[in-house]
Image (cartoon, helix red, strand yellow):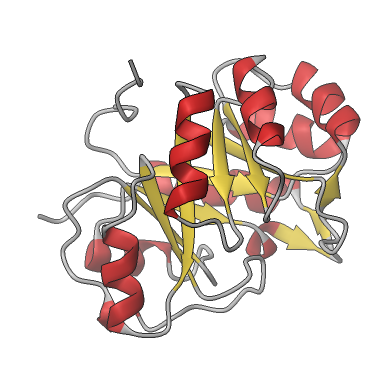
Length: 215
């Protein structure tokens, strides 16, 4: 039996993505976001980590933070193995993984899956909402670009979803009030000179924790 999507009450959750260094782990351990993301075995990304690096970083991370492995067109066995051995709690699929890939992965693990979608049109939104993944993530493009997509395309979404793309302390409140995402996902906006910035991470987590939701 598959686990039910995570429930943390009504507040908006936050994911800090693209951790690569022990210093990044120290930063999230201090700030305590809900999720910490690692881009696994995707050398095209400057935030890439190997499985060995992931496991070493994971060992030092606070148990209250859920580790998310981010995969781009990886062999399905890779996320399945890391999920089943407990190295990661969720797998985020950020490539061209189709419904058959998701169905196959679901036969290999009971853990939860996030599918990312690049949003350009209303058709992209409709495709995302139909996904068989446990969560969907709406992004501007490849991820980590620091750019937003057209938020006016987003309808009221009845399922748990992550908002990504160009989010920072300057627009988190407006994004949450306008779109009511289940979670927000930040990467480049919490970096300085290409590395995660502990002060920016702390500021972002504090901001999300203190935003009053408007119904």
